[in-house]
Image (cartoon, rainbow, N blue to C red; front, side, top):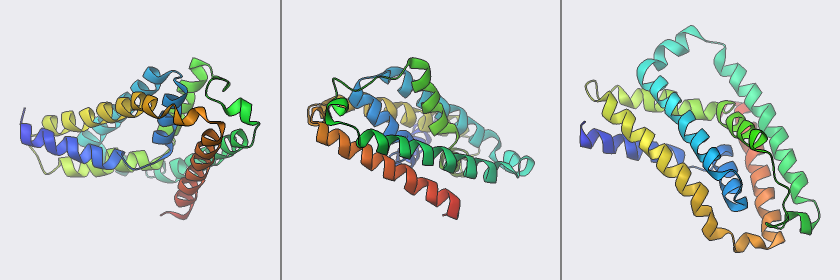
Length: 202
């Protein structure tokens, strides 16, 4: 294990994953609600792990063999994010009592994990960050792929679990129904912004 390459992978992984996006917004929301937090964080981290390993080992071959994957994931992801944004905006417009943290309607374990996986695997930006960018960077270390991959995977686990469980520090703020309205509205517009970027190819 090369420590300097490990740190490079760790820092690159964090720099790519910290940017706000559909996946991070969902993890934050679940953390604030204290609902299936461990499962959501684990699903995100394991998904990232699979994609990072894929990128480091064979991203060039995947792009060559599956030229239809990019447009399929782009339009499918945009459709899902548009629907999910509308769902959050509807939630923001509901009565204030239903938005209170203690009274918020809970989702089933299966529904929560399914939504988490959809936000992850239907988002082409996830593939860009993990498969393409990290896969490309890893080629700079022909004898240190394992160290780089381990660092990037560590970044995913560290970030998602910190975000999910760290949200508890913000829970007093979001005990106010107005804060929940603002959060749901911001998440909705975040989803729509990402969807528009996917459709315009930005």
